[in-house]
Every structure is written in structure tokens, then in C-alpha cells.
Amino acid sequence: MFWYYTELFYKSKKGIIIKSEITSIAIGGFDGMHLAHQQLFKKLDTKGGIVVIQTGYANLSPYTNRAEHTIYPLFYYPLDNIKHLSAQEFISLLNEEFPNLQKIVVGYDFHFGHKAAYDTNDLKTLFKGEVIVVDEYSLDNTSIHSRVIRASLREGDIDKANRLLGYNYKIKGHHIKGQGLGKKQFVPTINIHIEDFLIPAEAIYITKTIINKKEYKSVTFIGHRATTDGKFAVETHIVQSYDEDEFLGNLEVVFYKKIRANKKYDSFEELKEQILKDIAYSKEYFI
Picture 1 (tube, one colour):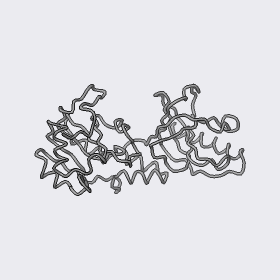
Picture 2: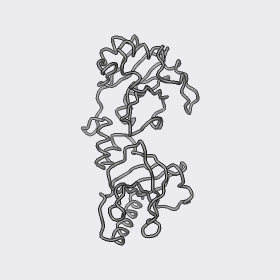
Picture 3: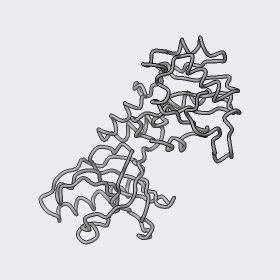
Picture 4: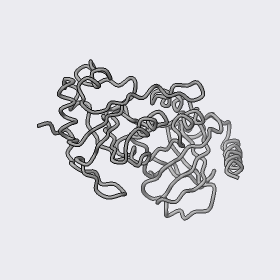
């Protein structure tokens, strides 16, 4: 008997979903849960589920963060636990884990099994139910892949990344102590420690910061503090009134637009003047 996922059920907002009730699944890595992934999910029936093959590359929506972008239950299978399987063993695993499985949905470039030696043709041959293979999906003449979105974020092209994702990119972290200069000499900022998520390129961005499920308009700095201590930081400034005690703990930063690149200024006064301009630009954007 194969056991790669420890739960036989999935607890969702709709209640407990038993794996034996699942009749259709989409299979893939699904990092980012972007527009191309959503094309696969559209082929699922009302008792559908998503089988996530977990790898160390997922940093757009790592771990269970994928659940924010779908109504379907997700079942996670570490790649290291299944990559040695033959094609037949993989199908046997799926049939055992999902005994009422009738339909499998995959992308055109889907491969599985030992050394990824098997493709969609093998899947169609071995699985006794329906196999749907979804074609490559493009937007604005750009084929949508997680690697393309990662490249856009690393370049600071938030507009493109958000278009391909189908939603505004978001990172999560927790509040940490900063330099203490913001409140004294510039504007107060919340310093954030980020793990697991891909951090966009060094720049200043129009953002919204979510604190205790409340959303605040903000400006976020990412990069090395060239004018002060030179250290890398992720800092967000809330541009509307809020309770400062609220920001202790976990935060989320949602990216809307890049304002400008990071640069070094000749004086604190010049830096502060630019920060105030960034804040004004952000307020105007949301208006």
C-alpha cells in the first residue's frame, strides 16, 4: 500500500472533504496558482481536487498558501516520495488514494515517474478513466509559466507578474525591529522578515499591507539601505491612519505597482524628501 499523504480528508471552508469522494483531480506543481493553472481547474467537476507535487522551487505560493486561490481541496505529495515510481505504480497510487477517481486533468507538458520518463500519452494509456490535457495558455503573447512570473518579479516588473498571476502578488512575514531611524528622522516604517516567498527586485512599490486581516494602503521599500546602514530590508509605511499596536506579529504585503528603483542619496534630507514624494504618489494612485 502506498502512503505519501498523511491525511485521508481535507478540511475546507465547506467542511470535511473525504478523499474517497473525489472524482476528478488536477495534477501539477501549481506554484503561484496562476492563470494557466486555473485553466486546468476549470476542467474539474464539483467533486474535484488538486494534487500538488511539492518541490523546493515553490516560492510564489509556498506550502498551503495555494489554498487562497482556489475553491478546490488541495492534497500535497512531496516529489521526493514519488519520483522513483514507474508509470503503473503512480497510477496505482492515485487509484488507491482516490478510489472513486474518474478524471485526471494535466497540462500539455506534464511528466511523471522515475526520471520524469513518462508523459501524457502514458497517462492516457494506463489510466482507465478520462484524461484531459490542457494546452499551453498565453496572455499578451506571453506563455504563462511560474518561471516567467518569477523572472518578472526578480526584475521588478510587478505589472507583468500580476497580469500573469491573475491577482496581485503577495508576500508574508513577521514584524521585526528596525533601525529606529524612520520614526525619528524620516517616516515610521514596519520592518518585515520574509521567509519562503520570492521577494521582488530592490525598489519602492505601491502596496497594501494586511495586518490582522485589515488592509491598509502603503508604500514598501525593498533593498539595501544605501543612504543609511547598507543592510538589506523590507520596510512598509502605512499611508493612512492606523493603530500602531496592530502591527506586532504577522503581516502580508500586496504589490500593485513599482514606483522607482532604489538609489543612494547624498543626505538624509534628500532621502526624506523623496520618501514624501513616494507617499504622495501612492495616495494619488489609490485615489
